[in-house]
Picture (cartoon, helix red, strand yellow):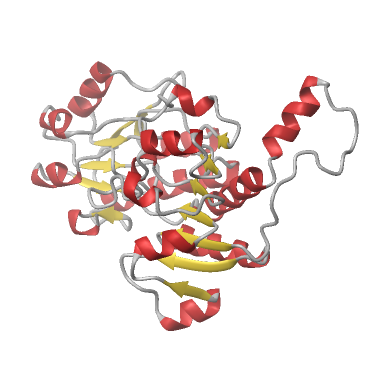
Length: 328
């Protein structure tokens, strides 16, 4: 164990219990407000910290890493996704990268199902009617949606979150299908009653609902491109609680406007908080502000994982959630 306390810089406000524990263990610099650090502030942070604790709102690229001081040895990411961090360059500079996997699977899967229901049952439209005061009572033909039971759900990415979605979808009576980089073991397929599709194109063309649950990597960028989106059935919907870059957002917007796709539920966007304004105008789209993992329990668990990774590193061992380029 080191004789002096590690210098830790946290880029965003974290739950109070997490910040308190970090302060007890390390020489920590916390944020006073919840605004993302400016580029200048990030540069100063990497120049002075032994450990940087960023979030997905921070761009930790090669240029920033090149300005880091020699003392920076760990980037302990608060979150599972690390597509905002140049892991390869960090490794070349002798800086380890860790993340917080497995914490938000259930929370994100819950939100996935919420979006499936919101789109297929037109929940936001009903909410808007009630909030406007225009509701005049029940009608046999008003706001007719579709039944989810019996529909085919195609899950793109069958990791922890995808499998959690599969379990929930089965409880709603949906038929579970999936495409994944590697096929699941037969016993897991049997447990989930899930059908594997080696061809993503063939799966997309036959599903009623597509759920995007794969990470953003160079190989998944625009995996749902214009050509593949056109394979979807006219009455199909797509839901994304993973990363916005997996879907070609402009192509999706065009097809939603022309009703080549029935609807979409999105919690993430290709350009972060800069959402396509044409997308905002569509009634067949449900938009959420990246809140798939936003539960108090999940955020605290993420912080606990960050602390374990830093403490293990401080004790001279490999962080349990270390990320290496080969994993990406």
